[in-house]
Amino acid sequence: MKAIGKLLLDSAKQNTLVSLHDFLTKNKKLFEYELIGDLSYLHHRAYSPEGIEIIEVTEIEDNKYQLNYQFGVNIFALCKDISSQTKLTGSTKIELDEKGEISLDILQTDKLSASEEF
Image (cartoon, rainbow, N blue to C red; front, side, top):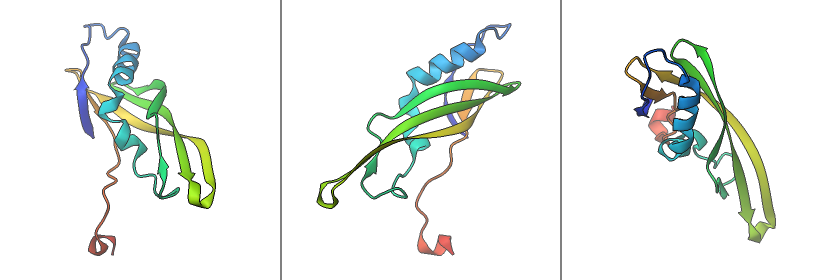
């Protein structure tokens, strides 16, 4: 889990979902690169020019949410006459503790060494 910030909660926890969605939208630069990850599995020239778009945030259970998002992917390789655009979707879990700390479940996408792969 990656801590990304703190949300000010009111005592009744009203509007928590709306506040969480707004926070994530305004602060997506803090975590969107990690959600998009390495796109080389598509093509070595694949990139996401605009980052993520938050589709929705839904409550799963008390203080646990799901973030659904999408992002565009472009592949452009002039020498091979490749120009492609597509949209990919994803989701991740969010935890919000009683103090308002927000944590996202982000996969570790670090490249493994040869010895770690075996």
